[in-house]
Length: 67
Image (cartoon, rainbow, N blue to C red; front, side, top):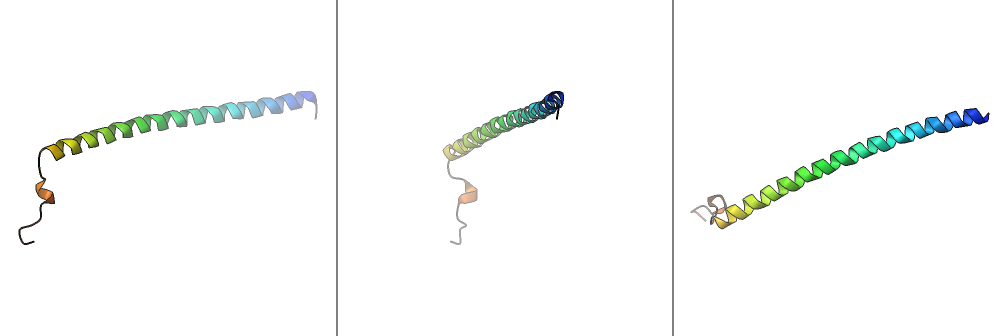
């Protein structure tokens, strides 16, 4: 294998590595955005639960009269 063939092989491997790194970077970015969305959703749910807990007993959780 000549030195030029080795350089070409290395350049090909480097190009694949750069593509892989870019794909992984994009995936990490998307996962970060999804985590942010889920954090916001959890915060809204927690606020909703706090607001409902302060409004008094929930009739859905009351026992029926025959108990």
